Image 1 (cartoon, one colour):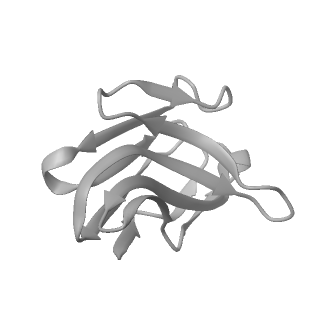
Image 2: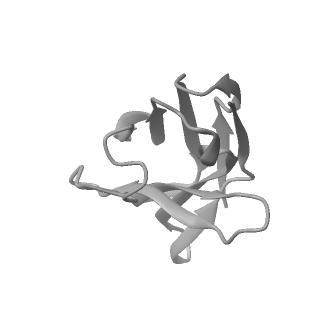
Image 3: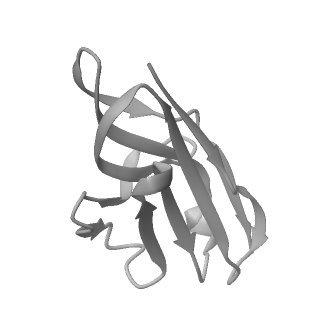
Length: 119
């Protein structure tokens, strides 16, 4: 079993910054892609950014140039640096990890951390 613990959410004014962290723990053989998704009230969950084992990154067009995803493989942790935040970025942010564990390769989700951007 893999546990994902997210931190770093909160309330910030428009134009401000936040840094999200997500640490994976458990009996993990290898972590492949890591990513962040978000879900705003009344909307579907959508990809924000993801990063491969080779540090290739992919971003949603709305956050390009403002958000940066990174990972620390030694700590099994993925980060999301969010700058120039906008009220439209308000959502619950979920960590997602593709990991090879006892029993095979699986997708895991964190419980989410709320980011609120005030205007």
